[in-house]
Image (cartoon, rainbow, N blue to C red; front, side, top):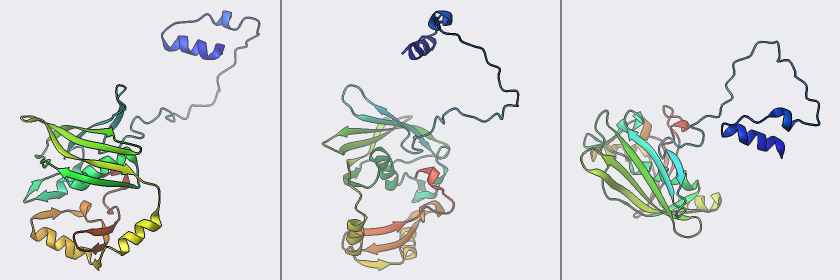
Length: 232
């Protein structure tokens, strides 16, 4: 329509003749409100829909692959400093899972996940990070996560397959019940510390834990000091 066409001209920097646009009509000027403006912000939040860990989403035109671009480091994600192996700050494997889930949404299934190179972060270090997802059937992707180190260049840290699932909470609860014996979470944390895995408060969200033969299941709650907005 004429209004949309006129707006499009303004968008590209042109100044249409409004008298011509309004020919045959009787436009009238109106006064602005006389009350004070409330100075409320109405611009959309540029971070809305942006995952704090996975970053900004891009869809590649050539092949439909998904690309997430972000930065990773103790400055951008301070809670990562609370995950240390033998004293070294290392990206947790659950971080890679959270990134993949940001692309597909939950519930989902992760399979064939391989952490090929630990992501070790020095104090104050920040790296560019990318996650690529290649379609592999309906609601199924092959994902890879890379960071760019100053000396080594781009490094592949994790790859695997993620598949979006229908919401079936009942089935999930049945699987949890069949895993094995319930254990105290503090027992797990004590054994982790003894093995050299230091977990701070940000990584102590396990509330219930079941351990079986070669598998485990848990109920996890966001720790009090780490709100859901952190998108771990």
